[in-house]
Image (cartoon, rainbow, N blue to C red; front, side):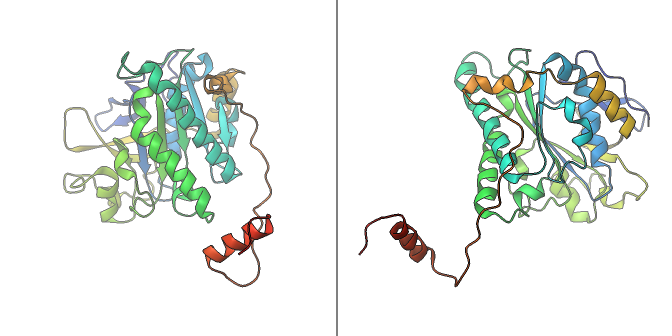
Length: 311
């Protein structure tokens, strides 16, 4: 399906992303919400994500919206659109954790400033909407081997999902496996899109209890139906089937050339006295070798090595 035209000024309450079965537009209400996109491999999650980027492109170029993008697949999905993004992390999981920590810092700065004045942040060029886009979220929440880093990422995501929507720091995430052990804060996403899934039980995990019984047969989606998914229309409890636009590589290159983020887009961190830089290259943490010892004994040995008291 041909992509929609890029709005000069995006309407954050009605971003055109897909077509309904009656050929009318399906528009995403992005303001003050978080979005979860669930779908099996090759189901078209990229179509949803890039349709959203395209709908926001006019605001990206004007500075009305900032995209902070995390691509754990080494940039395979998003690197082609790098000029569109104010922040981008794709290689270092520590850099991804830093990005999420800084999104929390922006959220914390806005909370006391907006409290008592408004209940929902209104994006402006001086106080833009920040959208944190995460591809393959399970790589950060379930499959990351560094336990401490995984806990740090989970803490930041929990804060953003529970407190960020009202102050204009939003999360849009895609994943293949919606189980609770993979995404423990799944219920903190008010807006959910179900593409083709592999199991019937996964449909309710993405769309909510009873969604499959009400017609969201995402587990029966044919393999050729990439970018076809189920959403909820305003005022109706029954899920509706929609088809998202296919955004080609050439379309992405055109977006990146025509709608790059302003050169100072990352300066939003100046609000909280933080600096930003290109994604750092850090050495891998040194691995302990030798016999396995209890944590209490390791702590004692480390303290002794550092010159602490000996008993």
